[in-house]
Length: 257
Image 1 (tube, rainbow, N blue to C red):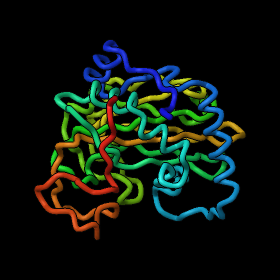
Image 2: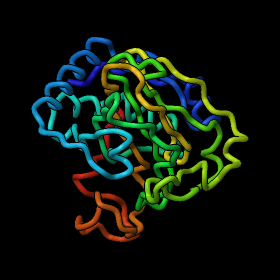
Image 3: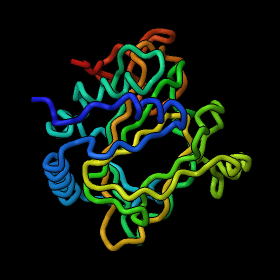
């Protein structure tokens, strides 16, 4: 059964195309957000988690491909409404594939800020028509670490990789980004979401509350994208063919109806 997800409006799509990000209040029904939150907490409690030492690990914890292990998260990620929304938001895209899902947790006192970065520079796709839905599973007030975005930064193409060197991020490499408008601090209720382009420079502050920030993300990309062969952990060893579509079970087409 499809997850209860509302459709993206044309006004929201226009805002996304202009700004590179959009807030989607009440994207999923509150009862679904509550069920997913409980499942997420149960999964996190059942797993023996050790803090990593990498630059990403210092910013947040993650349970990659959560939808492959949990039917309710899969039902959400494979929701036709989410696929329709992604198609509506991305210019010139007819269908989308699911690239990855993630359960993200930002623990107070353990994780620091998420430095400003783009998602796309790591990707082995030949087109940047890609976006991430970031869903609050519990209320996420701004000082818990909701995302912030440099508005319009998606217009400037690929700006290089972050999380590579200590003390290096998109702002240190490109100080001119500060001339762009930074999105306001966002207070999100459970079931609210933000969506950002893979080219939008974004980051998040440290969680200054006393409870973990809990969110679910699903990333979608143009089904017509071709594989470039660039090294990437998710695609290495899958025997994908260069200059061919991502026709592999790891990247399922998501129906829009």
